[in-house]
Every structure is written in C-alpha cells, then in structure tokens.
Length: 380
Image (cartoon, rainbow, N blue to C red; front, side, top):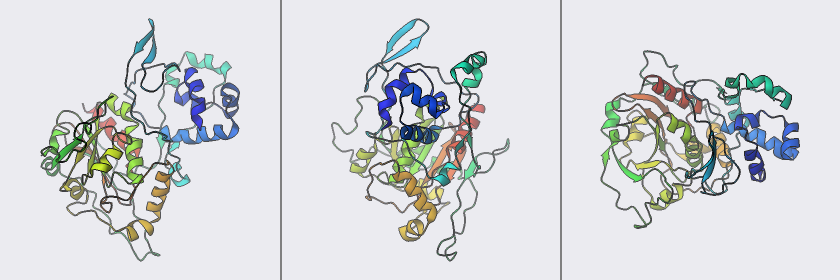
C-alpha cells in the first residue's frame, strides 16, 4: 500500500530517521500522502528501529529512484554518479513490515525526535552529528546486565501462570552453556549465504543426502556468529523472527558478525520455501538436536500445544504479532521443540549471549542482541 510513495521518498534523499521525524502535515504536503497512509507509515516505522553501537560507522550512501529489481544502483559520490552493480538483499514478495501489538510496542518505544522544518535545517547543518545519531530502543533489559567480569549474557523471558495459576513453570537456571559442549556438536550445512543467481537446489532438485557432518565450531572459527535455533521453518512465528533478524544483515556485516539458522530436522520442501525468501543466510541442520538440548540445559525443551500455546497468553500474543506480517505458514514438521539463540565470539572466545525460548514464538530482544554484538566489537 505504501509502495506508491517509494520513488518519491527515495528521490528526496532523506534518511529513514529523517522521514520518520517529519510531521504528518509535512508528509502530506511534500509527498502527497493520504492521512490514513501517513498514520500507517509512522506506526510501522517503529519496526525498523534498531540500536546501533556508538562506535559503528556505516558508509553514507545516497540513492536515486531509477533502479528497479536487481538493476545497478547509482551512487552519488564526490566525482559524480557512478554505476555500481550491487545485488539487493532477498526480500519476500509482498512482504510487509511487521505491525506489532501494543504490549510489544511498549517494550520497543522509539525515542521521540522533534520534527524539523525547512527553516530549522540550517541550524543543524553545523552539527551534523545530531542528524547521524542512531535510533535508540528503550525497554527493560531481561538478561543479566553485562559486566567486565561477565563471560556472557543469559536471557530468558518469564512464563505466565496458566489455568488460573494451576499450571506454573518451574523456571530455568541462569547458567550459560559451556563452550566445550557446543564445540563437540556435529551439524550439516544445508544452504550457503544467498548471492544473486545462487540456487543449491538447481541441479539436484533436492539436497538429500545432506553433506557429511562437520563440527559446529567451524561456524565461528574465524568470525563471531549469531546462531538462531528455529523450532520449525514453516512456523509463521519462526519465519517472522528470522526475517526481522536477516533484514538487519547490513548492520551485522559492518560489525563483522555472520548469521546462521540452525534447524532441528531437514525437510526438503520446507527448506526450499524458507530459503532465501525469509532467510538468505547460512542454514545448517542439527539432526541429533544437540543444540536444542543445550538450550534446555541437558533436556529437550519440548512442550505440547495445549499448555504451551492455546493456554499461554504470551504465546498467543506472539502468534498475533507474527501473523500481522501476512507471511505464509504451515504446520508441517516438528514444532514442539523450543529454540533460542547463541552469539559466539570467534574461535575459542566463548559465548557472548544466550537466549532461551520459554514461550512459543519468543524472540531474542534486538536491543540485547545489539548490546552483545557491541561488547564483542569492543573486545576485538
């Protein structure tokens, strides 16, 4: 619906932060937006807000509105316009930015920024650092606060009581998984990082049998790695989580951190539907589900749908948040095993962050993920 304004917004040369700080009246005057579209644009802008590390400098780029599809992008530099052929990130056809519910918005409120009129821009030109300041997420930090002596951050959301308090969760120990446990796990590489024209299924039609297992430690041997352990690639909550993380890939690339999705089983049709539409990074399979056992502190974190989903208000809220993206989904495959996330330093540096999915559809908070990545950058 908002794509009709894409060319006009891009031709303006303004950044996303500047557009989101523009007043509704100015959006209507400058870009001919309808009132309902203005409200939708400003509301969904919060889904794009990510806290950037203070010491991270992203290259400034200015695009014109002449490119389409995977065509070359014209970059405005000091010497004029040069054609630069760069492949665009794979994005699902018809994807929409997630529309979060009110309870989720309260955790990720964007710091208010005053709208700047044209006559005020001159006063800001001398202090360009103000315009380049990152959008900061405000919200409670659910994990352990990082300290100089801490080896990593452990995060796990609360599980609400169910059936009027009859069903209560026993809780989880705030203990990090030993690195030695993860290093011994064997995984099988399913897909590489997406590049233009890459299709691992083109000649074979199927990846069965999968490549020989390798040690998981090879994934983070050379660079820090985020490993997202998904319950099921066909689950709408898992697809939304993977998609919202992968759309931040340019930020993680600038920080020198790679992205990996880990599946607890390999279903050929499900992987084809998942990669690269919702996730364009590396996909590996953990057939023995050892990563999931590690997240469950030695036990398989399995729960049935009745108590874990239908009677869990948090899980139902997570499902509502994910379905707002309008992603396709199905119920094929094993979906009772809960996942999580690991952020590992390069080599034998250890685990920087561990998130445990307690309710179906829990996402690792982006502010915690960026905080852990920033700590890794500072220690390089």
